[in-house]
Image (cartoon, rainbow, N blue to C red; front, side, top):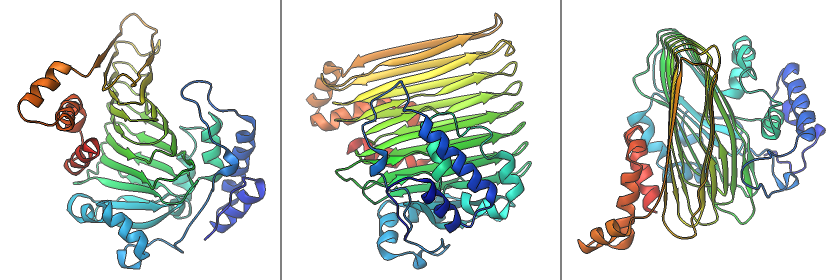
Length: 431
């Protein structure tokens, strides 16, 4: 076990040495740390009320990861079993990576197709040239305080390369779990889907609840090559003491398609805006998300679509639910001058379940040429008391009636999820 509370240059050197990394990665970490010290918290979004000095930056209880659950500590194995992760592995997935605290503790590939699916730490050593070619090229370390922090202390995450023309029969999955008070989790995920290939990737996130705050600041870089398709589905159910501050971005080339399916149920504060950079002609970017903010939760989520190529299309659907909490949409859609004959649609729907609930929409929509079209639709409504009364008059309890209304409100989102995750979403909404 290796833990550190005070972030310093010495700690970063010690971490890189522990991981037996090449010199260029240590240099990158130190450069990122210097930038982290210079930058301030974002000047938009919810207030971030935690101290970097109180965060544990690394913890690992396993000497190395395994492909056999019998070799995982019993308490850790029981945690993942309770979450349903182990049962889903053989039934639904072509491969899994499970991260506990700061490191991947279990990894298994269930397909015989010639893909690369490793922890990011492993890939740095096993595929150094491929790794270096893409790492830190789409999400730069100096973009904001949290990309800089991730660059300095990243650990774990998934590295995936899908060769040209390869189509997997079932999804790959990564699951991230925090069980330690005040822990920071800083995984780094890097995915390359080569030409005419296809990948569906699922991410799950949970944390045990504590009185003090934990921090999750991941970075995801995805490259979708010409004619390829990629779907990235997330169901996040962090505990209400976690600050979830994640940067996710995909670069989409000619005739390629990227889809973000993003579910935000838990956390104390979430700031997450998955992005598609539609670089190639006829590239497509879609995002459908749901944010459910309960008491004392602030979920500031949305999506970004940047149109660079001609004849590109993007579609954003955002569903926000607030019950004594705050659920905001914050997004950007930009059709650049060179992205002629492009089309973008944004639709934001919000339902407020009580008088204490809050929601705001912060869209930035820009069209820089005359041959393209962008539309934005937004609705905010309160819980329909007549519908609630009607359901209760037919024998449903108030809680059951509300559950049905919410389930119907997010039906578009549920249809896009794999079956086992749609069932999990239903359970979370019911709770």
